[in-house]
Amino acid sequence: MTAARHQESLVERLREKGIESETVLQAILETPRHRFVSDAVARHAYRDDALPIGYNQTISQPYVVAFMTQALLKPEPPRNVLEIGTGSGYQSAVLAKLVRRVYSIERIPQLHRQSTQRLRELGVRNVSTRLGDGSQGWPECAPYEAIMLTAASPTPPDALLEQLVEGGRLLLPEGSPHETQTLVRYVRTPKGITRETLLDVLFVPLVSRTS
Ligand code: SAH
Image 1 (tube, rainbow, N blue to C red):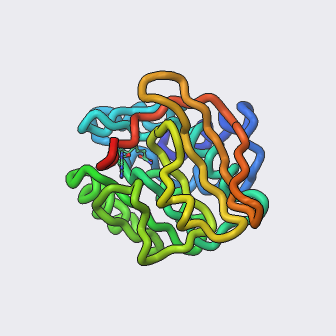
Image 2 (image 1 turned 45 degrees about the vertical axis):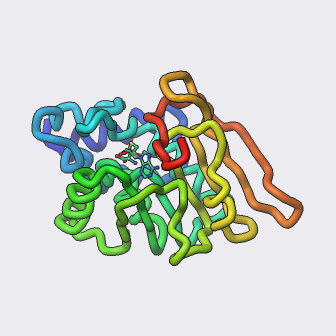
């Protein structure tokens, strides 16, 4: 099978699993996941599985990327998104097709370097990357209409909730490392923060200065 055929069959599988947003499915179709992993695992790139990217980290399962992206776009697409955990850069590249501006922070220098270079090579121009502890956010570019953590934490970091606009949402794989976590959507409203659970997930832990 050609890469294009593999991509199409992945998108079919995501549709069967319940992803309904055509814009999200189109973004997944147009993002070459095999370019975000090493040659050693590239042949598995269009399976609906998480894959190793080195340094004990993983590129997320396509279904989870699609689900989180779809959840982030509701009720209407945000104009800017802050992602915590750039990893391979795949989630950033998918988001970049759907929102005007993406900011993404990674704490492991090698992954930060590789993903920044990869996004540049692929011609993705609306993602800004930064090396650092994402639990502190990126205050210079705040506020954000949406924030997505792609690493698990027992609670949402306060600094991130503070960098949301009113009406802004934050998606967090909530829970302890190596246990099943729950994807939770927090929304900042005039009356405070609301919380809604969405899906069982499994992510690597958020490693912050204070944890
Ligand atoms: N979104 C990624 C998935 C990355 S896995 C992708 O599409 O490939 C989670 C990533 O979060 C790892 O690369 C890990 O190093 C990073 N991470 C963990 N704690 C972090 C923190 N406090 N700040 C920034 N990145 C962090």
